[in-house]
Image 1 (cartoon, chains in turn purple, brown):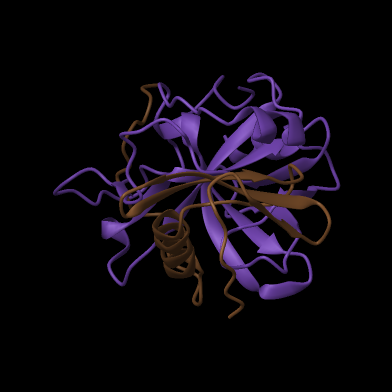
Image 2 (image 1 turned 180 degrees about the horizontal axis):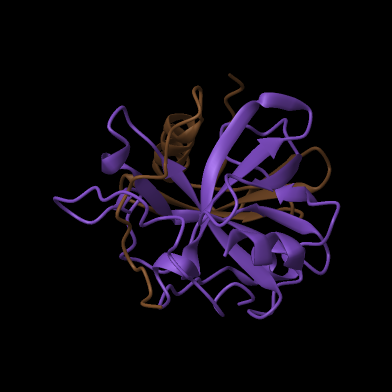
Length: 155
Length: 77
């Protein structure tokens, strides 16, 4: 659940981006807040410009088999060892929210021990910039907040 | 734009800490080596552009209502 993720990231929740969100290079500090209690969605907001905000998900909540491959330089920069990081996907929400997609090509990776993060392009091929998040043909009430995700948050 | 002529094996230094090497010429293709500090982002233009465009689309202007969606990958209780 988002709460647990945020707890993992400790109270300050302000993450210094050593690699920028592409297109937003001047923003180097982002904060993470829950979207709604119990929701799998989170806000990722630029600390210096609150109008720059994104909805993100913890990728492993939705794609438990997600495989992130970073270059050695990126791993070193982030101090990433595969166990101390949270991987967030930026969600695009079009006019019809049920058409929302998540970017699995370039996730935001946060080393929550160092409170350092950034957007990194996954070197592993085969992931989509626009992976659908909503099941086809249904938009069912109250299913999101009770989604009961567990255990994957600390990966 | 600054345009320089270089031969294979020659280099360009940018800012004292970024080194670009013309590694190899193969017909119309050039292989380029880049050494730069780790925090310098280096992408092929097309990769950079498509991620950047998707990021811009992901910017939230109006808070969406996300409470009524049946999401993928949901675990059973």
